[in-house]
Length: 110
Image 1 (spheres, helix red, strand yellow):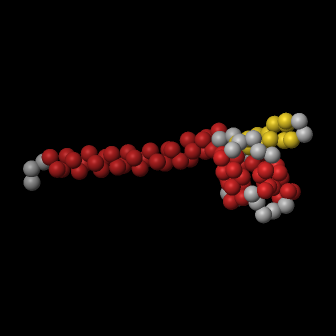
Image 2 (cartoon, helix red, strand yellow):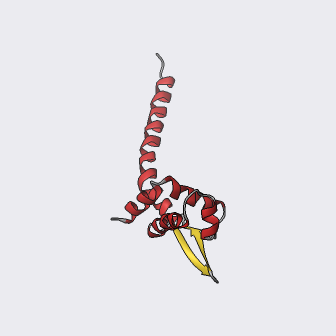
Image 3 (cartoon, helix red, strand yellow):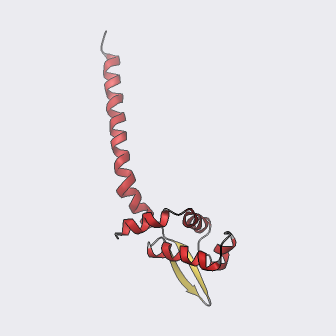
């Protein structure tokens, strides 16, 4: 599996996207804090966090007895640059060409 595959797999699940949204709202959350927003067991949340960590979307740091979870947006940005931005460029180019064509026809006498 490639890095992109891990990120796409992690983002495919709505619970994992919700966890990323929670970390986006406030970084450095504990497992207890993250699980309080979900109707699932602690082990279920841990399983989802492990998938996010494996994809590089979440990084952790120990602070005393607590393990803090932080959002790492870099893999999402790489996906954006690789898979979204390049396809959007073609659309923008097509719209610019259409605009130029229409403007050139407008300026020509009938």
